[in-house]
Length: 87
Image 1 (tube, rainbow, N blue to C red):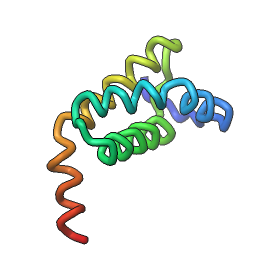
Image 2: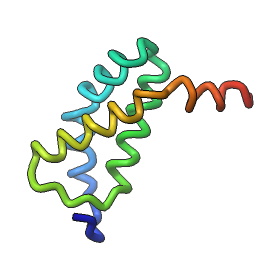
Image 3: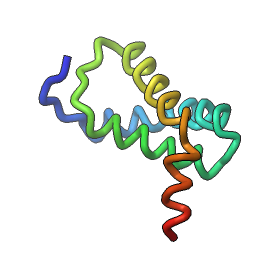
Image 4: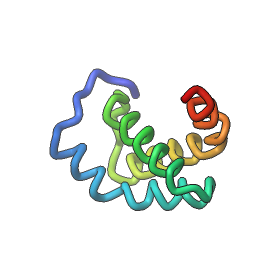
């Protein structure tokens, strides 16, 4: 499934416009923290931009984004607390 693909500017912008609200809402439902939800949103979108997964369709892309969001949301306190304590 991994191939050396490059996402186009239009594809990235379209995905951000279409799914950023969904990603944020899912992250917030897990974390109950707006700042951490924003960080998770950014992390998921960066993973989308840099990952080489070739999606089999729009539903596959949506499922991938949701799964990445849930994965990032499971332990956000551990991930982001580390950085907060370093400042």
